[in-house]
Image 1 (cartoon, rainbow, N blue to C red):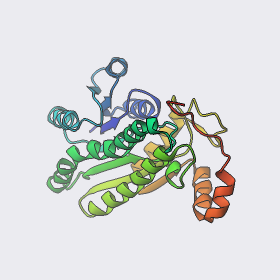
Image 2: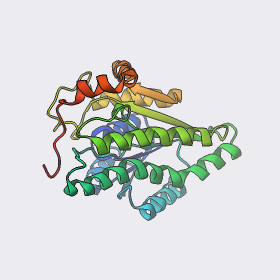
Image 3: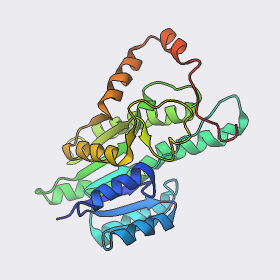
Image 4: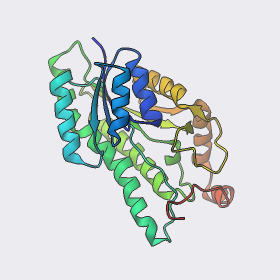
Length: 261
């Protein structure tokens, strides 16, 4: 039976690459994104495989409706990937950045919760009823930016640190239920989100290659994966640095442009 995969943020960047990866292998994909015209273009390329849902992951009612519709039409998903995310430069001292902080936290953290919540009970029940089929996998796309606070990206770093902790809590909560939780922490990926970064991005991956590696980690149900492995090493080093060394290294680091800057 073909995999049933739900992906948020599926209209561009990593989400689109993930959708295409699974579709090319025969999966049925529920594609969530705000830009419906881009989802329809994807559906045209893969007729009969794509269920399009033009929505905002912050809209709990839209998310619930989409989940119910997909389950009714295609069945309980095998994989749910909470990929939708935004990244903007932010500075706490500027009042005009408060809206950006709100948006980043709402999409990157609460959007992940709202993506998973409508599916959890059905996936757990599916595992109990069908012993030959696992309950499925909930996949959260976090980031190595959640390992330490990056100057000029405080909202993004905080949101990804929160996502990592949330996913760990969820993993333990669902232990033994048949539903697995996978945390993915990518480094730099060539997407519209990173195209405006005014600084070097070491070990950057094409979106298609990142999607291939992420799909492999999902298939293996690895609980925590950093992609690529070089960023795993860098992240572990950064986490071990004393604050005074970290501060000296990053105080003058280039920063992502602010929306209002």
